[in-house]
Length: 301
Image 1 (tube, rainbow, N blue to C red):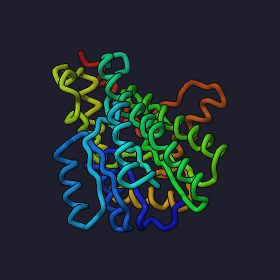
Image 2 (image 1 turned 60 degrees about the vertical axis):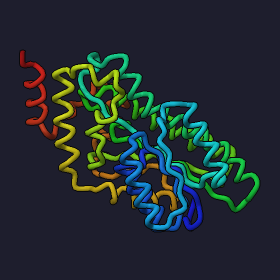
Image 3 (image 1 turned 180 degrees about the vertical axis):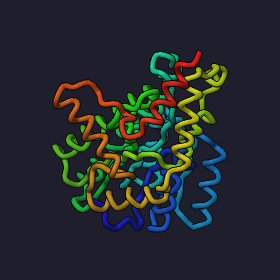
Image 4 (image 1 turned 30 degrees about the vertical axis):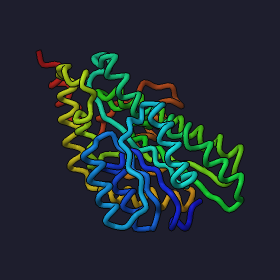
């Protein structure tokens, strides 16, 4: 558990917007050195300028987290500049919706590459550095936070690729927590499972690879983007609120971080379905009008 953040180093992917940017702001206020990572250059530049104005010791790098080579190069640079990072926030992610059979191979590769392999590379690159630092200093403390989603604990329809990617992040994070516990008491992990929070993820198409932008979205994908965008933008919890929860969790050693604790009732229902081997419960049981509208929209000729 990290109680005093001053002078410690945080690596944050997806730092140009949303949770990454807000966590960078919290880190700056707490006197941390910051490594800002994003694939969108203009957003990264704006975040870097903001942190620089605050006098933060900083490294800002444009990195595609799905690239093993780019993440390994980042790791080497971080180690040389600041040493092993104390906090790694594997946060970069993209959203994608639509009926699960309508997603192209390229869609799958893009979403899984960023959402899953981006976290894999963050864990693979930085955990050994952190373990080495802990071995050399019994007072050294580190923490890894991976951003999943409530979609990593549920299976909402018309969001298949995203669900699969976020379930993988939850499984990876739970295993990371257990594996770290086998070898050290100085480093731990958390998984962030936000519900609908305005972060910019509903506009993920802005960073779609060039070869994917040529593909015309299907009806189900257009419908899902509209529904998700509306839900995200009307969310009552802000990205700044969630950033505060992240730092509280790191300080207290809390593993599961929820932006909307009441949403856990839906997770409980899903787990009851599994335990009782009953068919999956209608996800719109408490909001039948939304379910009806979605069915009607998808079944229109």
